Image 1: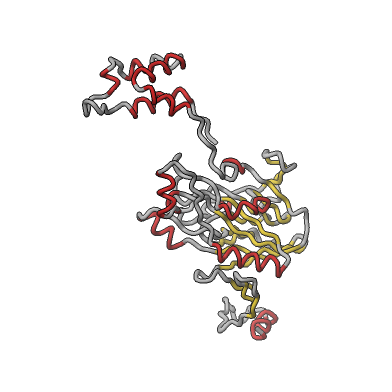
Image 2: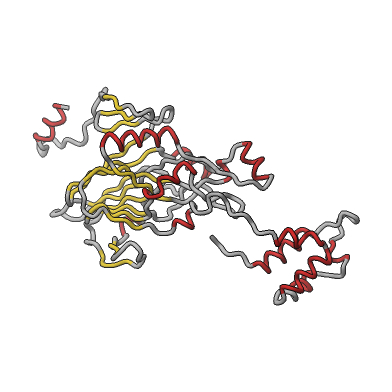
Length: 349
């Protein structure tokens, strides 16, 4: 959290609160006492004189400033306090569900929250897509999978007066948060501080070199992982994928954005309305087998939070049901250069 200069806080608040005089509307209290802004600045180096000046103009003013501000209930569950969380898979095979979570903002407040804020009470803003998150719990239990939550920037610029914590429901899952997670030597997930309103969150990422870290507590990058061999997953509210050619003798790389588990809350302007349209509630399912990985996209049903993966629908109430596709769309077949085994597999589906 940012440290506030107490002297500067007194000066700015003092000037702000003494602009109007109740006895003589429009006449600042400062001038009534023969004090101007220059005089106030002369006291910057002496806190005691500044206190005396404040008490001279308004005895109650400094009393309010002196009161210790109570910490927000979720002060330890903010983007700033989480810092860097660097984790590795330790080369285990398995399945992972990867999604992103945004801190709450003033736009997430309901009517009661605004009343609380006006009365100086803490607001525990909620923005989690709860039914979707419960469906994820169903998937994790059924498939014995691990949850990875990548923190991301708020949907709107966080002001000092806005809460910057994550949804309180997510606090028990703090151990699942990671700003960097290495699955194997060919796949890594990161939180890259990408603006949620950015049109294409993958812009420029194909140039990014991927490093490994010596140990979890050291944020300094260690040796570079194999150049042009490591694919990348980034936290973002959009769900997009791009492939990067690496040559005829190797597999292409991919860069993929996650989609998120938190609801959209954008300003009603051009940028915000477009971002709201592109906001994708969902995540990525990652399977690891040695040095090989598979990535699949999933999107939540906005009405009930359920999602489908490999012919199964995972519900928020814990049920897992069979889902049959009504149609199947072929990719480019390239007749004459096609792979008959691949075609036969599609026909069997």
